[in-house]
Amino acid sequence: MQEIPAKNYLILVEKFKDKYGRSPSILHIGNIANNAYNNAKLLNKLGFDCDVICYDYYHIMGCPEWEDADFQGEIKDQFFPNWNAVDLKNFQRPKWFAQGFLKFCIYYLVAKRQNRKISAWLWWQALEIGRLYICLINRLLSKYPFLAKIFNFLKGVKKTRLVISKFFHYIFIFFYCLKSYTITIVKQKTSFFDNFSKKINLIPSRNSLPKKTESSEFDERVKEIVELFQRNFPEREDQLSFDDLEPYRHIIPFWKKLFDNYDIIQGYSTDPILPLLAKHPYFAFEHGTLRDIPFEPTARGRLTSIAYSEAEHVFVTNSDCINNAIFLADNRVSAMNHPYDENHGLQVDGWQELRQELCKKLNADFLFFFPTRHDWVSGSGYADKGNDIFLNAFCHLRQAGYKVGLVCCQWGANVQDSIKLLSAKNCVDFVLWSQPMGTIQFERTAKACHVVVDQFKLGSFGGIVFKAMAVAAPICTYINENEILKHYSEIPPVINCKNEDELVVNLEAYIKNPAQLSDLASASKLWIDKHHSSWDTLKTQVEQYDKFLNQSKNLLNNI
Image (tube, rainbow, N blue to C red; front, top):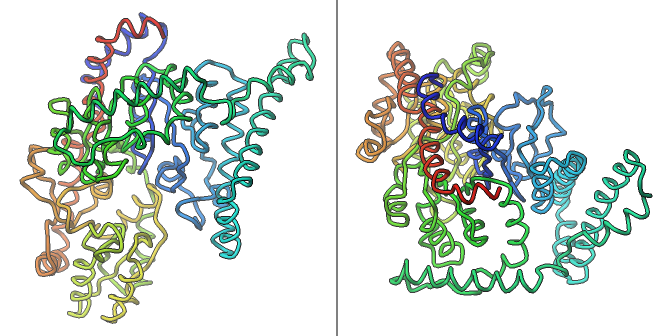
């Protein structure tokens, strides 16, 4: 990050500190592909005080370990990873990142913000235990399908759901009582049993919430949002209904209590729905969310539409979503880069040894790295990557006598379809299938291979492209240059191809003249430093935060 412009824009932080004696606080809601984690990490470095709540979501790409741990070992379940089963090399999760059961996350963050250290410590332990529990249970169910059938049956039984609810209710009681007992020992004022009887009545349960006042407030808010939808989208046949919002009734009071502890709320993907319902000002952050979701004739589609249209400001990281964002939020839209530290991978080592190992294993002297999700068969997944286009080109090159090798990641709906395609063309022996890679492993492999390959359908680019370019790895993908120029002043230096013929011709040229790859690699890193720096990403947000905080002085005085 550049020091001089940073100082100019971060006067906001210093002024805020002078006035309130603390840094501006931001809550980031949701963490698909670690966008919230990376964003909060960068903002914290600049002096903001950010927390992330990643509730009921455990996918490997939504975990800090995926981003910053050079871990060793195999993740058995991408959706429920057990990080205790791999070597994290002393990596520790930051305490500003709360991941686990929703209410555990909320209780932890409220205690943290209110500086209740013992309570915060206890809820952090609850989050750790809860994550381990759900990941082990899901691993067990996937290993023994008959248990999954029994478990799914029991989940459908009302009495069983009640037992599970009570189980977690008593976990809450345990942690509150343990906290009370600890305080009792320190202060020596009251007995454990006195605190037990007092605290047990403070534990919220589904049956006691919402109160009548909270319920009536929710009804009023739902009515307001339904009317807002009618005004904002009068042409839509699928109008928002009260039933669309009813599932949120019992949880919004908890979110309200959490939101009251922050100056700024920023919702990612569809999570702006939550502060909208809580009637709390918020920013919205999209990362592909606005392609299709807002226009679905579903409750999710309708709520996403109204949430983005009512946001203070919308940050857009995908150039192909700009027009949809403007349609929803008018001029309250800013295009910005995905949050990422462009120097993250500069210190990664071991890639030379990895290149030698891969070349030997794949009988190759030219390596492709294809980490993209395998979704290319219509009707079976997103079908938005065009993986088959590159796989066919790769087979063509191998059959033409070029000793090319390929590293693929085993994720997406069409992995088996890709394997069948390679097998049919007798090229399966020249392909290594790896588990999805954490960022550090990704960076090492990108440097080890000669060309990194992404999608051939969307025309835009995301994490794979900018993370590879940041470590000076040449990229082959399809980009819609006209759309990209709306977002950047200069086309990124990639091997731009859309079909199999273009791929074969262009890649053949680089295989015959590998020296050109060095020039492409250098140009890639220069482009990232110029057009995709972390400071540009932060600056876009800080400018909008500054406007909002200046307009919200009365609100801030009450915090």
